[in-house]
Length: 91
Image (cartoon, rainbow, N blue to C red; front, side, top):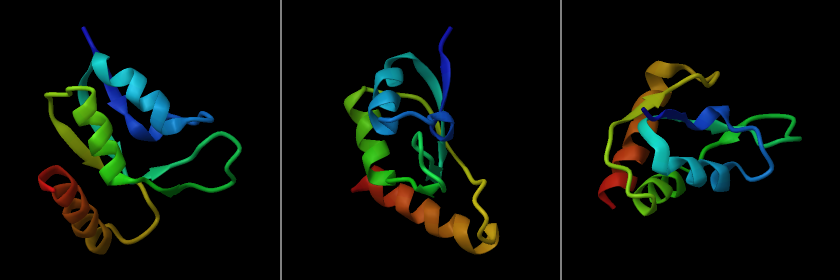
């Protein structure tokens, strides 16, 4: 048993810290391109490099799925987000 770590479902004061605390239990990661900390009026772009670093530090060994739910046109935006993810993973 493990968790499906969905980075877009953390609406806390410390989004990245709370994600890091869950990584050891994750069997799958759905990486969202936006986050929304508690009290924020709007979503903001996720720090992909920081999220990849958190997964590495937590010794995550599974799959990462990019899950796109943002308002921008996905045909234009998804390739850009995938490039950021690839750079973070390979960088």
